[in-house]
Amino acid sequence: MSIIPPGISQPLAELVSYFFTRREVILQNWRTACEEDLALSKISSLSREEFNNLLPIILDILEQRLLRQTPEADPVLMASLHGLQRWQRAYALPETLRELNHLTRILYQELQLFQELIPQANASMLLQVQQQISQLMSETILSSVQKYDELQRLEAVNRVSTLREAIDQMQELSRQRSDMLRTSSHDLRGSFGLVNSAAHLLNTKGLNEQDREQFQNILNRNLGNIKSILNNLMALSRLEAGEELLRIEPVDVGKLLTELVTDAQVLANDRGLILQANGPDTLVLETDAAKLQRIVQNLLMNALTYTPAGFISVSWSKSDNNYWLVSVQDSGPGLPAGLTSLLASQLKPVTEATSATGIGQPEPSVMPASDEQHIPPGPELANRANQGEGVGLQIVKRLCDLLDAKLEIETHTGRGTLFRIRLSIHQAG
Image (cartoon, rainbow, N blue to C red; front, side, top):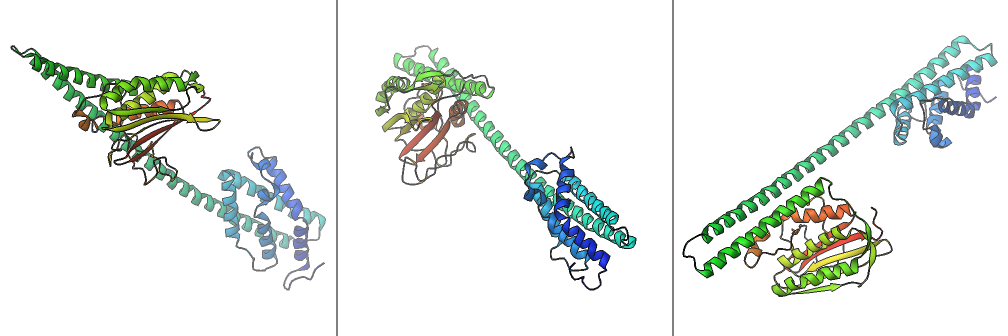
């Protein structure tokens, strides 16, 4: 037997030695008791080291206290770190408490076993050891509870903060939606006013043919605007209500996009724009042809509407074995600085150094897109940038979401805008 420290009786030294030689048994019996506890379901997922964690140090502290030595470790800190480790392993507080209660019981059992092995052991000494075990384990449990309380408070604060941010975002989206609908209502009222005025003037007696033709053009143009706005709002309503269903089938997108650009050439020629298509003539993949056509058509008509002069390019290609790309790029004025819409927090313009448009950083704006092929003539183009800007692009974004596609924007003031859509080659239905 080793030398007995001063002031320590031989029976107590024997008990300390007994506990030391039983360390492995104590820890193993503790794990077995926890595994047999139906309320503890995570034990099997922990390795021996993970399960024991810092509890061997707690046993060191017990030994040092019994020998009246200053513990080398702080029991409060060790218990707190053990509670943190159990928290990180997704333990609930009752589970940790049950584990520690099992360890307390195992230690009492070992003390009883020692008494059976050494009947002449002093009862007073055994009672003092029991009190030391009780005190240490109480400190350990209390420190674990305090750590859990601290972590729960922190988690509650984080949840409140996250919830507050979500509420703020929802309020901002609601405000933007209200602005969008208010703008659309204003556009409708304005167009209806012009329609009523033109219709009234057409009934004027003695109206010459030139004035009659002018009023008819105003009437037709504003009826087209009304139809476009209503179609946008109805399409957005259907998308948000989940009434748009996917129809996935093999589609030759090369042929589809080529025909789409060909049909738009007349409009491009009328505007004095050069419209080009670049991509394989045949590219068969799985998608919803109608929704893909609506997306690209909206972006193409938008480019034709807001590009006063220059070029428009529509391109498509395979990105890799899993994805393909379709892009619409124009040489227009770029997105208006500071333009905001309902998608401002959902659609982030591309800012990485690999952006296709190169020099400078893209400006964070959102471009309106029309759901109709009607293009207002002449002077009205300048005013259209402030009318219903959120509705059209939100339709495009919703359709992209439906197809599980990623929509990206690159824009530079005075140089143009690029819309890029990344879609899966094998679209899930």
